[in-house]
Length: 134
Image (cartoon, rainbow, N blue to C red; front, side):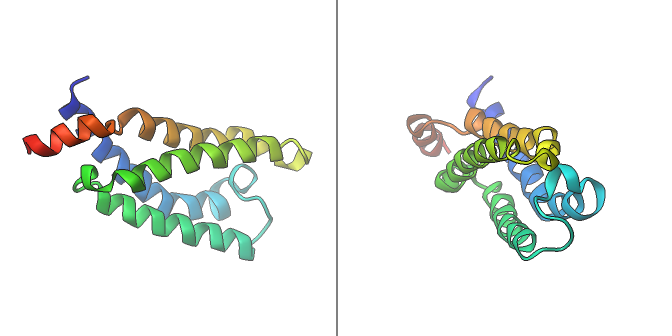
């Protein structure tokens, strides 16, 4: 895959992830699939805090899609924090049988987000050469 194609795919991914964080997460947690997405039942303080943090991150990811090369730290933070978050939730989902739904819900979703961003985000040297060429 060429670097320009990869950058275009990164832009699309940033918008899709951003929209999912803003709109999809609340729907999944409270309407469509709580057992795979919400760690507490009902509208809890912790659930609303997670939604607030992810909605904010989503807005910044959408903004970063305009020029991803200027927002590599944010993109890398999103990628690696998603993978760490997924790893922690993976192990926590075994502590209570009521949390097994997360193994097919938010855990794999965060792994996919993290992996896509890691794969699509250009390395520092490639990003610098792309910025010089632009």
